[in-house]
Length: 218
Length: 237
Image (cartoon, rainbow over all chains, first blue to last red; front, side, top):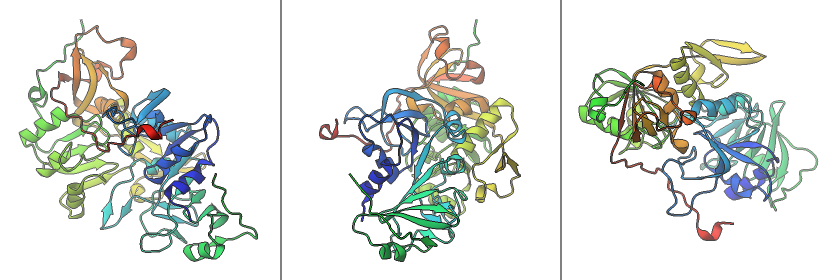
């Protein structure tokens, strides 16, 4: 089974040289730590920076330089700052090649829910609705089940939607799955995880090929 | 000679703000918020406000200060997750909340300032956000119609400004400030450093002075950090 860093490490393998990438809050943020040395990738944070760098050293924090998770960050050489309208022009205009974000629920038709639990929790959608409505390449990073042990990969979402039919790939602590033709297609197993465990944790329709390779986490 | 927009301080800058008005406030989280103007709005105890701002501050800073005193009737935001008092007021129905996608919020402010009454966007199609909104297909993809936003007052924060109201923002403190500056009937800009006209390079201006009606140099900025994240020497390359 993968931990959060393991999920991030596996997703980092999906990143290509020369891509602009938007990473959501939580597990997605960790993906930046696993980009191979020498690969040219620029991270976009929707609050207004391209070329986001790692956290600053203690004492070098700048209140004016944060990411979308409100964390203090640094700017890489060649970085650019811009306003929120320009930032979402990059996103809506499909200039960003990959979006990685978290979710509470994903459905077998590619629907995603991650912003509200009616009557209980309302955080807001932030930039997630803009991101999922426009991005061509969306990967969801999340745990396969919630804290109560219930599957987060469902026949249809029960929570208010963030976007419809948009998620193409899900990477969880148990597996990599692709979404197409109204089903989850098992692509890889996490190290030490059997297909039956994935089947048991997936409430939505699951298509399992004859051979399911185990993930290679370097 | 350029038109002089300078007022002495936040007290003079906030003159004319009345109960029931719609205000825009720049900032993302606590980054780039108009701290001095918010402090004055709290002091004036103006109520029944509609506030358009990406976030709602935290419990004891930013717009959280106005929420504590129940000065806000309605919030228009995209993300409010860092404020317990906000969540409480919203779930209990004391506070009216319109949550909209962040890109749509930015563009609705920009459109308001740019004289565009509405626009189509794919964001929010098929979700609660689309309820009651016109939808239309372009290039085989469904979009929803979003309307422009304007405000009686827009409060923005910049790094440097000149007496003509030209503004330069610093790093990610720019965020919503430029669009909101455009969309305010009266736009109040507070800056960390106010310089005479001619001192800022015209090539580097982010918000041209035409969008700003009042400008002042703020003092005593706290610039609070919401999530202080650092790396240790050992983890660095």
